[in-house]
Length: 400
Image 1 (tube, rainbow, N blue to C red):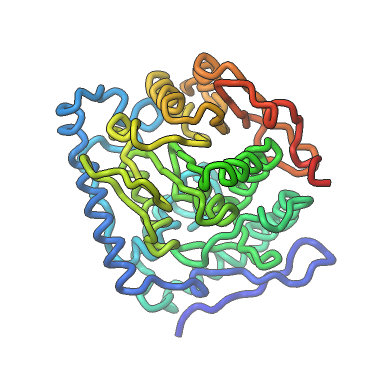
Image 2: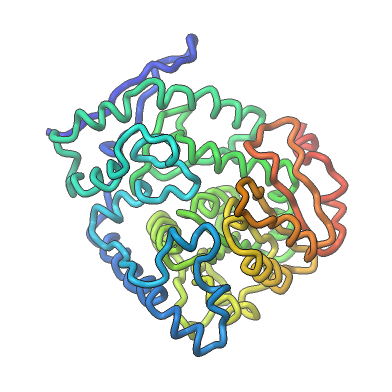
Protein backbone atom coordinates (compact mmCIF):
# COMPACT_ATOMS: atom_id res chain seq x y z
CA UNK A 1 0.00 0.00 0.00
CA UNK A 2 1.29 3.44 -0.91
CA UNK A 3 0.58 7.05 0.02
CA UNK A 4 -2.40 8.49 -1.88
CA UNK A 5 -3.39 11.98 -2.91
CA UNK A 6 -5.04 14.19 -0.30
CA UNK A 7 -7.58 16.92 -0.96
CA UNK A 8 -7.12 20.37 0.53
CA UNK A 9 -9.65 23.15 0.91
CA UNK A 10 -8.31 26.46 -0.42
CA UNK A 11 -8.21 29.44 1.91
CA UNK A 12 -10.35 31.25 -0.67
CA UNK A 13 -13.92 30.97 0.69
CA UNK A 14 -15.54 30.72 -2.76
CA UNK A 15 -13.05 28.27 -4.24
CA UNK A 16 -13.67 24.59 -4.71
CA UNK A 17 -11.48 22.11 -2.86
CA UNK A 18 -8.09 21.90 -4.49
CA UNK A 19 -6.08 18.74 -4.71
CA UNK A 20 -2.53 18.51 -3.48
CA UNK A 21 -0.28 16.86 -6.05
CA UNK A 22 2.19 14.62 -4.28
CA UNK A 23 5.11 12.50 -5.40
CA UNK A 24 2.71 9.57 -5.62
CA UNK A 25 0.95 11.12 -8.65
CA UNK A 26 4.13 11.76 -10.65
CA UNK A 27 5.34 9.76 -13.62
CA UNK A 28 8.39 7.73 -12.68
CA UNK A 29 11.42 7.43 -14.94
CA UNK A 30 11.60 4.35 -17.10
CA UNK A 31 14.72 2.17 -16.83
CA UNK A 32 15.83 3.49 -20.24
CA UNK A 33 15.45 7.10 -19.13
CA UNK A 34 17.39 6.43 -15.95
CA UNK A 35 20.17 4.74 -17.92
CA UNK A 36 20.42 7.73 -20.25
CA UNK A 37 20.57 10.09 -17.29
CA UNK A 38 23.32 8.00 -15.69
CA UNK A 39 25.34 8.25 -18.91
CA UNK A 40 24.99 12.03 -18.89
CA UNK A 41 25.92 12.12 -15.20
CA UNK A 42 29.15 10.36 -16.16
CA UNK A 43 29.84 13.03 -18.80
CA UNK A 44 29.15 15.77 -16.27
CA UNK A 45 31.53 14.06 -13.85
CA UNK A 46 34.18 14.21 -16.58
CA UNK A 47 33.55 17.94 -16.98
CA UNK A 48 33.84 18.50 -13.24
CA UNK A 49 36.93 16.33 -12.73
CA UNK A 50 38.68 17.73 -15.80
CA UNK A 51 38.20 21.43 -15.08
CA UNK A 52 41.67 22.08 -13.59
CA UNK A 53 43.48 20.33 -16.42
CA UNK A 54 41.35 22.08 -19.05
CA UNK A 55 42.05 25.52 -17.55
CA UNK A 56 45.78 24.83 -17.44
CA UNK A 57 45.80 23.55 -21.02
CA UNK A 58 43.81 26.49 -22.41
CA UNK A 59 45.18 29.26 -20.22
CA UNK A 60 41.84 29.87 -18.48
CA UNK A 61 42.11 31.90 -15.28
CA UNK A 62 40.93 29.60 -12.44
CA UNK A 63 39.50 32.66 -10.70
CA UNK A 64 36.97 32.88 -13.55
CA UNK A 65 36.32 29.17 -13.94
CA UNK A 66 35.74 28.02 -10.36
CA UNK A 67 33.10 29.06 -7.80
CA UNK A 68 33.86 32.37 -6.12
CA UNK A 69 32.23 34.86 -3.77
CA UNK A 70 29.03 33.30 -2.36
CA UNK A 71 29.49 30.02 -4.24
CA UNK A 72 33.06 29.44 -3.05
CA UNK A 73 31.93 27.70 0.12
CA UNK A 74 28.87 26.06 -1.42
CA UNK A 75 30.40 24.10 -4.29
CA UNK A 76 33.63 22.17 -3.70
CA UNK A 77 36.32 22.71 -6.32
CA UNK A 78 37.22 19.01 -6.23
CA UNK A 79 35.86 15.83 -4.71
CA UNK A 80 32.17 16.04 -5.62
CA UNK A 81 30.48 12.90 -6.91
CA UNK A 82 27.52 13.21 -9.25
CA UNK A 83 24.46 11.25 -8.18
CA UNK A 84 23.33 8.42 -10.45
CA UNK A 85 20.97 6.28 -8.36
CA UNK A 86 17.41 5.88 -9.57
CA UNK A 87 15.91 7.80 -6.63
CA UNK A 88 18.34 10.70 -6.88
CA UNK A 89 17.41 11.27 -10.51
CA UNK A 90 13.73 10.30 -10.33
CA UNK A 91 13.26 12.89 -7.54
CA UNK A 92 15.74 15.40 -8.99
CA UNK A 93 13.74 18.51 -8.06
CA UNK A 94 13.86 17.66 -4.36
CA UNK A 95 17.59 18.35 -4.39
CA UNK A 96 17.59 21.46 -6.60
CA UNK A 97 16.75 24.51 -4.41
CA UNK A 98 18.37 27.06 -6.73
CA UNK A 99 15.90 29.83 -5.95
CA UNK A 100 16.14 29.37 -2.18
CA UNK A 101 12.91 27.35 -2.05
CA UNK A 102 13.20 23.73 -0.96
CA UNK A 103 10.44 21.43 -2.23
CA UNK A 104 10.88 18.71 0.42
CA UNK A 105 9.91 21.17 3.14
CA UNK A 106 7.75 23.46 0.96
CA UNK A 107 9.57 26.44 2.35
CA UNK A 108 12.64 28.60 1.95
CA UNK A 109 15.97 27.15 2.94
CA UNK A 110 16.34 29.82 5.60
CA UNK A 111 12.93 29.06 7.16
CA UNK A 112 13.34 25.58 8.54
CA UNK A 113 10.14 23.72 9.37
CA UNK A 114 11.79 20.32 9.22
CA UNK A 115 15.25 19.08 10.21
CA UNK A 116 18.08 20.11 7.89
CA UNK A 117 18.51 16.57 6.59
CA UNK A 118 14.79 15.95 5.97
CA UNK A 119 14.99 16.34 2.19
CA UNK A 120 18.01 14.10 1.72
CA UNK A 121 16.58 11.52 4.11
CA UNK A 122 13.26 11.54 2.29
CA UNK A 123 14.86 10.77 -1.06
CA UNK A 124 16.82 7.82 0.31
CA UNK A 125 13.64 6.27 1.75
CA UNK A 126 11.40 6.68 -1.29
CA UNK A 127 10.71 3.46 -3.11
CA UNK A 128 11.53 2.79 -6.74
CA UNK A 129 7.96 1.65 -7.43
CA UNK A 130 6.06 3.94 -5.08
CA UNK A 131 6.05 5.63 -1.70
CA UNK A 132 6.06 3.17 1.23
CA UNK A 133 3.54 3.40 4.05
CA UNK A 134 6.37 3.89 6.48
CA UNK A 135 6.78 7.57 5.56
CA UNK A 136 3.14 8.29 4.66
CA UNK A 137 2.54 10.17 7.90
CA UNK A 138 5.47 12.49 7.23
CA UNK A 139 4.25 13.19 3.70
CA UNK A 140 0.73 13.78 4.98
CA UNK A 141 2.08 16.34 7.42
CA UNK A 142 4.16 17.95 4.70
CA UNK A 143 1.71 18.18 1.81
CA UNK A 144 -1.64 18.55 3.56
CA UNK A 145 -0.64 21.39 5.87
CA UNK A 146 -3.09 24.11 4.89
CA UNK A 147 -0.84 26.99 5.93
CA UNK A 148 1.93 25.76 3.62
CA UNK A 149 0.13 25.32 0.30
CA UNK A 150 -3.18 27.21 0.36
CA UNK A 151 -1.56 30.68 0.52
CA UNK A 152 0.04 29.99 -2.84
CA UNK A 153 -3.34 29.91 -4.57
CA UNK A 154 -4.30 33.62 -4.37
CA UNK A 155 -0.69 34.61 -4.96
CA UNK A 156 -0.50 32.48 -8.10
CA UNK A 157 -3.83 33.78 -9.40
CA UNK A 158 -2.45 37.32 -9.12
CA UNK A 159 0.53 36.34 -11.27
CA UNK A 160 -1.62 34.90 -14.07
CA UNK A 161 -4.26 37.65 -14.01
CA UNK A 162 -4.38 39.28 -17.47
CA UNK A 163 -1.70 36.86 -18.74
CA UNK A 164 -2.82 35.00 -21.90
CA UNK A 165 -2.96 31.22 -21.24
CA UNK A 166 -0.21 30.62 -23.78
CA UNK A 167 2.24 32.23 -21.34
CA UNK A 168 1.18 30.31 -18.24
CA UNK A 169 4.10 28.33 -16.83
CA UNK A 170 3.42 24.61 -16.61
CA UNK A 171 5.74 21.98 -15.22
CA UNK A 172 5.98 18.27 -16.07
CA UNK A 173 4.61 15.99 -13.38
CA UNK A 174 7.76 14.06 -12.82
CA UNK A 175 11.28 14.36 -11.37
CA UNK A 176 9.99 15.22 -7.89
CA UNK A 177 7.56 18.04 -8.74
CA UNK A 178 4.92 18.69 -6.06
CA UNK A 179 2.41 21.40 -5.30
CA UNK A 180 -1.25 22.36 -5.38
CA UNK A 181 -3.61 22.14 -8.36
CA UNK A 182 -4.85 25.46 -9.75
CA UNK A 183 -6.76 25.44 -13.06
CA UNK A 184 -4.77 22.50 -14.39
CA UNK A 185 -1.42 23.93 -13.30
CA UNK A 186 0.71 22.37 -10.57
CA UNK A 187 1.67 25.36 -8.40
CA UNK A 188 4.50 25.83 -5.94
CA UNK A 189 6.70 28.81 -5.11
CA UNK A 190 9.18 27.91 -7.86
CA UNK A 191 6.42 27.98 -10.48
CA UNK A 192 5.31 31.42 -9.29
CA UNK A 193 8.87 32.75 -9.52
CA UNK A 194 9.26 31.40 -13.06
CA UNK A 195 5.88 32.91 -14.00
CA UNK A 196 7.14 36.26 -12.72
CA UNK A 197 10.11 36.09 -15.08
CA UNK A 198 7.92 35.16 -18.03
CA UNK A 199 5.63 38.07 -17.11
CA UNK A 200 8.59 40.46 -17.05
CA UNK A 201 9.79 39.32 -20.46
CA UNK A 202 6.23 39.63 -21.77
CA UNK A 203 5.81 43.16 -20.41
CA UNK A 204 9.30 44.13 -21.52
CA UNK A 205 8.66 43.08 -25.11
CA UNK A 206 11.35 40.39 -24.99
CA UNK A 207 9.00 37.53 -25.92
CA UNK A 208 7.55 39.59 -28.79
CA UNK A 209 11.12 40.24 -29.96
CA UNK A 210 11.88 36.51 -29.95
CA UNK A 211 8.76 35.95 -32.07
CA UNK A 212 10.05 38.50 -34.59
CA UNK A 213 13.51 36.88 -34.52
CA UNK A 214 11.92 33.54 -35.37
CA UNK A 215 9.97 35.13 -38.23
CA UNK A 216 13.12 36.83 -39.59
CA UNK A 217 15.73 34.13 -39.06
CA UNK A 218 13.74 30.93 -38.79
CA UNK A 219 14.82 30.46 -35.19
CA UNK A 220 15.68 32.32 -32.00
CA UNK A 221 18.67 31.37 -29.88
CA UNK A 222 18.77 32.02 -26.12
CA UNK A 223 21.76 31.69 -23.77
CA UNK A 224 21.18 31.46 -20.03
CA UNK A 225 24.07 31.69 -17.59
CA UNK A 226 23.06 30.01 -14.35
CA UNK A 227 20.22 27.82 -15.59
CA UNK A 228 19.21 26.32 -12.23
CA UNK A 229 17.27 23.13 -12.83
CA UNK A 230 16.04 24.36 -16.23
CA UNK A 231 12.74 26.00 -15.27
CA UNK A 232 13.06 29.05 -17.53
CA UNK A 233 14.42 27.02 -20.44
CA UNK A 234 11.45 24.67 -20.14
CA UNK A 235 8.97 27.55 -19.98
CA UNK A 236 10.44 29.41 -22.98
CA UNK A 237 10.48 26.25 -25.05
CA UNK A 238 6.82 25.56 -24.18
CA UNK A 239 5.87 29.07 -25.29
CA UNK A 240 7.97 29.42 -28.45
CA UNK A 241 8.13 25.82 -29.64
CA UNK A 242 10.77 23.97 -31.61
CA UNK A 243 12.21 27.07 -33.26
CA UNK A 244 13.69 28.18 -29.96
CA UNK A 245 17.26 26.97 -29.37
CA UNK A 246 18.34 27.14 -25.74
CA UNK A 247 21.91 27.11 -24.41
CA UNK A 248 22.62 26.54 -20.69
CA UNK A 249 26.03 27.64 -19.36
CA UNK A 250 26.84 26.76 -15.78
CA UNK A 251 29.19 25.16 -13.30
CA UNK A 252 29.15 21.38 -13.94
CA UNK A 253 27.64 20.80 -10.50
CA UNK A 254 24.65 22.98 -11.41
CA UNK A 255 24.55 22.00 -15.07
CA UNK A 256 23.85 18.47 -13.84
CA UNK A 257 20.31 19.49 -12.83
CA UNK A 258 19.37 21.44 -15.97
CA UNK A 259 20.89 18.88 -18.35
CA UNK A 260 19.03 15.94 -16.79
CA UNK A 261 15.78 17.86 -16.28
CA UNK A 262 15.56 19.27 -19.80
CA UNK A 263 17.02 16.13 -21.36
CA UNK A 264 14.43 13.83 -19.78
CA UNK A 265 11.43 16.12 -20.28
CA UNK A 266 12.23 16.53 -24.00
CA UNK A 267 13.33 12.94 -24.58
CA UNK A 268 16.82 14.16 -25.54
CA UNK A 269 15.55 15.28 -28.94
CA UNK A 270 18.52 17.07 -30.50
CA UNK A 271 20.02 17.84 -27.06
CA UNK A 272 23.78 17.99 -26.63
CA UNK A 273 26.03 18.00 -23.56
CA UNK A 274 29.42 19.20 -24.77
CA UNK A 275 32.72 17.73 -23.70
CA UNK A 276 35.98 19.54 -24.59
CA UNK A 277 36.63 19.58 -28.35
CA UNK A 278 33.11 18.35 -29.18
CA UNK A 279 31.68 20.09 -32.25
CA UNK A 280 28.93 22.65 -31.71
CA UNK A 281 25.93 21.57 -33.83
CA UNK A 282 24.49 24.03 -36.32
CA UNK A 283 21.03 23.52 -34.82
CA UNK A 284 19.74 21.98 -31.62
CA UNK A 285 16.96 22.09 -29.07
CA UNK A 286 19.13 22.25 -25.97
CA UNK A 287 22.88 22.72 -25.64
CA UNK A 288 24.66 22.35 -22.29
CA UNK A 289 28.09 23.94 -21.83
CA UNK A 290 30.40 23.95 -18.81
CA UNK A 291 31.21 27.53 -17.80
CA UNK A 292 34.95 27.16 -18.30
CA UNK A 293 34.39 26.14 -21.95
CA UNK A 294 32.84 29.52 -22.90
CA UNK A 295 35.85 30.66 -24.89
CA UNK A 296 35.99 27.39 -26.80
CA UNK A 297 32.42 27.77 -28.03
CA UNK A 298 32.11 31.58 -28.23
CA UNK A 299 32.75 31.87 -31.95
CA UNK A 300 30.45 28.96 -32.76
CA UNK A 301 27.52 29.53 -30.46
CA UNK A 302 26.03 32.63 -32.07
CA UNK A 303 24.32 34.57 -33.25
CA UNK A 304 22.32 34.80 -30.02
CA UNK A 305 19.08 36.77 -29.74
CA UNK A 306 18.67 36.83 -25.96
CA UNK A 307 21.08 36.35 -23.06
CA UNK A 308 19.77 35.73 -19.55
CA UNK A 309 20.83 35.73 -15.96
CA UNK A 310 18.51 35.56 -12.97
CA UNK A 311 19.62 35.79 -9.36
CA UNK A 312 23.19 34.55 -9.68
CA UNK A 313 25.40 37.38 -10.99
CA UNK A 314 25.57 39.13 -7.58
CA UNK A 315 26.65 35.84 -6.01
CA UNK A 316 29.72 35.72 -8.30
CA UNK A 317 32.91 37.77 -8.21
CA UNK A 318 33.04 41.04 -10.14
CA UNK A 319 35.60 39.52 -12.53
CA UNK A 320 33.29 36.61 -13.27
CA UNK A 321 30.30 38.86 -13.93
CA UNK A 322 32.39 40.99 -16.28
CA UNK A 323 33.61 37.91 -18.17
CA UNK A 324 30.03 36.80 -18.73
CA UNK A 325 29.03 40.30 -19.80
CA UNK A 326 31.86 40.42 -22.34
CA UNK A 327 30.79 36.98 -23.55
CA UNK A 328 27.24 38.29 -24.03
CA UNK A 329 28.62 41.19 -26.09
CA UNK A 330 30.56 38.78 -28.24
CA UNK A 331 27.78 36.30 -29.06
CA UNK A 332 24.71 38.55 -29.30
CA UNK A 333 23.33 39.72 -32.61
CA UNK A 334 23.59 43.44 -33.22
CA UNK A 335 19.94 43.68 -32.10
CA UNK A 336 20.29 41.10 -29.34
CA UNK A 337 19.29 41.90 -25.76
CA UNK A 338 20.14 40.86 -22.22
CA UNK A 339 17.43 40.14 -19.64
CA UNK A 340 18.80 40.52 -16.14
CA UNK A 341 17.03 39.91 -12.82
CA UNK A 342 19.56 40.69 -10.11
CA UNK A 343 20.14 42.90 -7.10
CA UNK A 344 23.04 43.30 -4.68
CA UNK A 345 21.04 42.54 -1.54
CA UNK A 346 23.77 41.39 0.83
CA UNK A 347 27.02 43.19 1.70
CA UNK A 348 29.17 40.63 -0.12
CA UNK A 349 27.09 40.75 -3.31
CA UNK A 350 28.61 42.10 -6.53
CA UNK A 351 26.94 45.12 -8.13
CA UNK A 352 26.24 43.38 -11.43
CA UNK A 353 24.09 46.30 -12.66
CA UNK A 354 27.11 48.59 -12.64
CA UNK A 355 29.14 46.05 -14.60
CA UNK A 356 26.43 45.48 -17.20
CA UNK A 357 25.98 49.23 -17.46
CA UNK A 358 29.65 49.64 -18.36
CA UNK A 359 29.24 47.12 -21.20
CA UNK A 360 25.77 47.88 -22.57
CA UNK A 361 24.86 51.57 -23.10
CA UNK A 362 21.09 51.06 -23.27
CA UNK A 363 19.04 49.95 -20.27
CA UNK A 364 15.33 49.69 -19.70
CA UNK A 365 13.90 48.74 -16.30
CA UNK A 366 10.94 46.45 -16.86
CA UNK A 367 7.62 48.13 -16.18
CA UNK A 368 4.57 45.92 -15.71
CA UNK A 369 1.20 47.58 -15.30
CA UNK A 370 -1.33 44.99 -16.44
CA UNK A 371 0.38 41.92 -15.04
CA UNK A 372 2.34 41.21 -11.89
CA UNK A 373 6.05 40.56 -11.54
CA UNK A 374 7.80 39.48 -8.37
CA UNK A 375 10.93 41.61 -8.42
CA UNK A 376 11.72 45.25 -9.13
CA UNK A 377 15.25 44.43 -10.31
CA UNK A 378 14.45 43.22 -13.83
CA UNK A 379 16.22 45.08 -16.64
CA UNK A 380 16.73 44.79 -20.39
CA UNK A 381 20.14 45.79 -21.79
CA UNK A 382 21.32 46.31 -25.36
CA UNK A 383 24.32 47.59 -27.30
CA UNK A 384 22.14 49.68 -29.62
CA UNK A 385 18.87 51.54 -29.30
CA UNK A 386 15.95 49.27 -30.19
CA UNK A 387 12.71 51.16 -30.59
CA UNK A 388 10.64 48.01 -30.29
CA UNK A 389 12.02 47.57 -26.78
CA UNK A 390 12.94 51.02 -25.47
CA UNK A 391 10.01 53.01 -26.88
CA UNK A 392 7.45 50.98 -24.91
CA UNK A 393 6.80 51.26 -21.21
CA UNK A 394 4.80 48.03 -21.12
CA UNK A 395 4.30 45.82 -24.15
CA UNK A 396 1.25 44.21 -22.51
CA UNK A 397 -0.79 47.36 -23.20
CA UNK A 398 -0.52 46.58 -26.92
CA UNK A 399 -2.50 43.38 -26.32
CA UNK A 400 -5.60 45.11 -24.93
